[in-house]
Image (cartoon, rainbow, N blue to C red; front, side, top):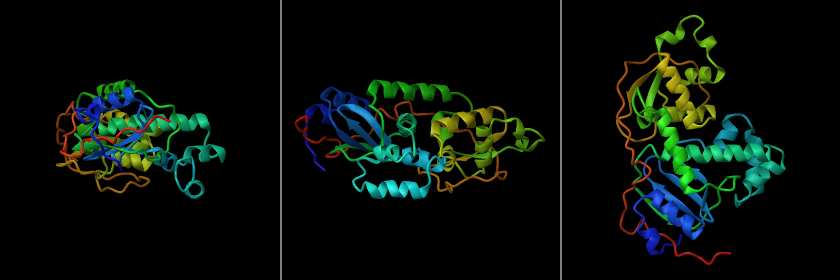
Length: 288
């Protein structure tokens, strides 16, 4: 890892300002964000092409958990590209996923990871040399990325509680969900989410278990909450990820009463705390 002291990047007050500076300079790098959930932001020629975070399923998780490709096929793809720089091309070349479909999945995972990172205050960030990432898209501007994150947060705003609180709250099935005919009338995706609400899983856990995006799962949970079919269990008292098993769900069991979630910190993505010697950037290399 190369660390430098380039003034425009070192003086960036927050991640959006940093991404804007990287966009202006057409930089290629990886931004390492520490905190919970933390993650990596992959930038190529100033555009954000991928994000990875424990807070939301990435491209690999979306492909495997959804059943689009199997474990043996995925292992073969990884073995064929030990550098992991051409995983997307290998997936397409082997006919495991279409080029257009992989582009949609890649962008979906990018926006979902940005949304997940926006739900908690980062501790710090560090700019490093670029590392391989699984993506197949032309990249998005920082402005488009932040606009999409804001749109998603606004869609989830409202009762009961903020988007951040909903993401980390364990959800349980309500007794009304067991009334005759109630579940049968739900769309299949809502039935899947309902089956995963066992009082131990958070929205993040359910997203990983189902191989779906965090934001999409949270929208479905909001719908189920509004209909009284699920209800919050006790929200997490800290920012650590849930340890509930992220495996294929089974019908859940009842749990205790609702506790109101806390409010969303609107500066989550924007204001990571800068640490001496950490929030700096590598000296730029000549553009190839």
